[in-house]
Amino acid sequence: MRQEIVLEWFDQNKRDLPWRRTTPWGVMVSEFMLQQTPVQRVLPVWEKWLAKWPTPRDLAKAKRSEVITDWGRLGYPRRALRLHESATIIARDYKNAVPNDLTDLRSLPGVGEYTAAAIAAFAFNQSTLVLDVNIRRLFARVIDGVEFPTPSPSQIERRLRAELIPADGAKWAAATMEFGALVCTSKNPDCADCPLKRQCGWRKAGYPKSESVRNSQAWVGTDRQCRGVIVQALREEKKMTTRRVQELWHDSSQVEQALKTLIADGLIETTGKSFRLPN
Image 1: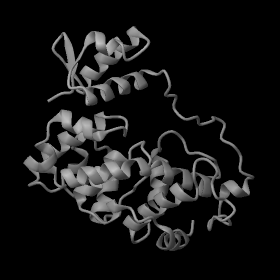
Image 2 (image 1 turned 60 degrees about the horizontal axis):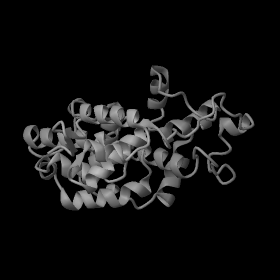
Image 3 (image 1 turned 90 degrees about the horizontal axis):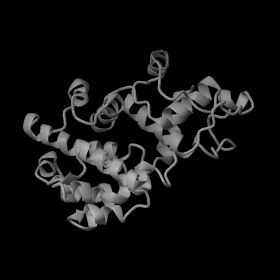
């Protein structure tokens, strides 16, 4: 792959996203929010959070109920609690500054290998191996000639992708991510106008479909939807009785299971007679 083509494309086409001109804390918040959530849904929530909690210490002082409420409908609200936990540690142990060391970043709640690499690259301009779903799909098509990558990267894939990183590794991470998000998309990629089409192995192979069809995760009627309905109701009402919670959903057994997992995840609390968001 000719890296200069992607980097030049990025210079001309990158979106003006606010977390590209913010503090390391702003970058960290964006990385938590962007996990499995589209940019357009994240933008207004991110801006609200940074205005309300501009530093880790500010967020650490907030109640968990407030954090969950302001997370809104981004989904996977456990991310909000992990971010709150990380903010508390950063404020206490790192003098209110997001650490720039990969090992320190990985030690924080909710920060895995990918998130640590992304924060290091986008907040501290480090040349790390950033492999999100957009980047992996781009490489899979152009280099490997397949429609989609495997569910998770292997050590061989990591080694080969690391060899592609040019001198400006942070820019490379941002450019390949943006290219995958805007051009080499999961559905309806812009192959006709793609600046990499002459190099693309997937194009040369005739655009073969992957053996396993990737469908969007089911939502309607799932336990996850039931959990979301309960949490949203508790955002709007400070306290709800068991009977009131049961009225939110058509399947009482599903509600009971959802309540158990929400309590286990720390997303709600119970007095035995009623439920509320955690303090």
